[in-house]
Image 1 (spheres, rainbow, N blue to C red):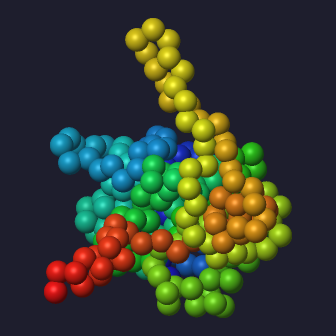
Image 2 (image 1 turned 90 degrees about the vertical axis):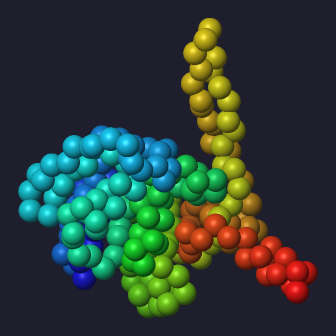
Image 3 (image 1 turned 60 degrees about the horizontal axis):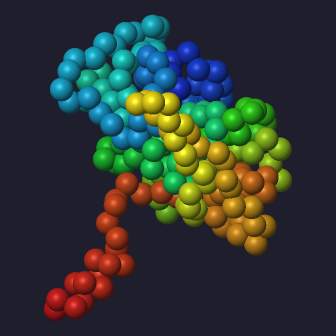
Length: 236
């Protein structure tokens, strides 16, 4: 298969290099990644200005814009053909409400509009070891359990020394937000605040804190389907 790879840490990120090397075992790799770090840009795209792009080698490009634009430019601009999108490896978990803000995740949400399969990969911010030693295990798990028969988008998070793999759902806030204010300037900060309950391993935040690999099926559809169906019933 043909694999399109991007990230939000930029074209020179170690995590991108690691993912490219691992992915080569599974197909032909194309890289279209941001020129520089675009962390926490969520699903932003550039619709007002030109942006720079450059081909660095065969099937290897940078785009001076967001992860979402990397996917869009690869498909609509460069007319590249691919079967699946890999995004990452992000150095730092993308679980709970981080999913809303993550550029790593935005890339796979963009793939949903293209009807492509996609996987986002993230790991503990202190080590790529969990990803390096368990990438093949995750790929085998996805294949052997036919996970893509159920959804097209997967969010995978690797603790440093995983004890196994769990299918999970998105958790809540996993950080304590505060602002450091200095005169008329402010910077947003966050302290990790993971819920660590061994009885809630179906939640992505608890799963990674208890040293299990988390695989969360996601959707790009923001519709509250329960509300939609219930309202429709009331209106009939």
